[in-house]
Amino acid sequence: MSQPPISRFPVPDLAALPADIRARIEEVQEKAGFIPNVFLALAHRPAEFRAFFAYHDALMVKEGNLSKGEREMIVVATSAVNQCLYCVVAHGALVRIYEKQPLLADQVAVNYLKADLTERQRTILAYAMKVCERSQEVGDDDYVALRRHGLDDEDIWDIAAITAFFGMSNRIANAISMRPNDEFFLMGRVPRK
Image (cartoon, rainbow, N blue to C red; front, side, top):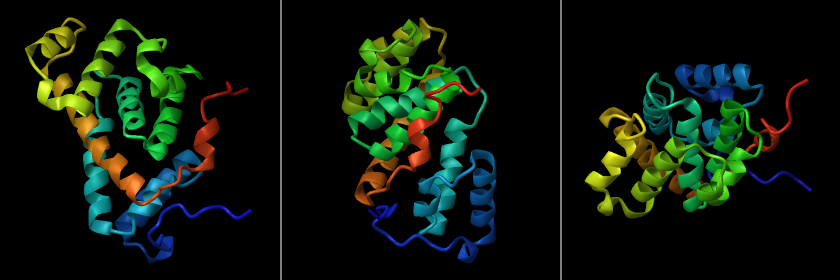
């Protein structure tokens, strides 16, 4: 059986891409050992590729009070609601790696309320889910609950922005039938020897 395409749209040849995009993809390939399909699929539209990854990095690759694992949990929980296979699988791998818990990503994707989370993480995800599903209902009580766990206004903004950004990402991934790389499914599940 042949491998299904990674996108409904043409995937450009790496050698034909603009130098900055090709360099970014090669850097990721060097670090990960493979090219995540999101890079290849979005390279179909270079200007949007640049904008997407600039905003992604501004939200996900930064210092702050939210850990890398917490940021990735937000992506997994909200992407599950949006039924985005690509983001649940790819970011689930990152949750497993950052949190060093091989079961956590699956728990968060299925039902974060039953997952092995701290109260802080559960509060973060409750807010993210509210932003994802009922943002019009966000109010002062949400901010009070988050502040009780040491989160400030910048952290609260980040939670909302990550949720919103990946809401867009989920919709694009679903619309173009972006396929997760097989490598993601096993990452972080079995401890390295």
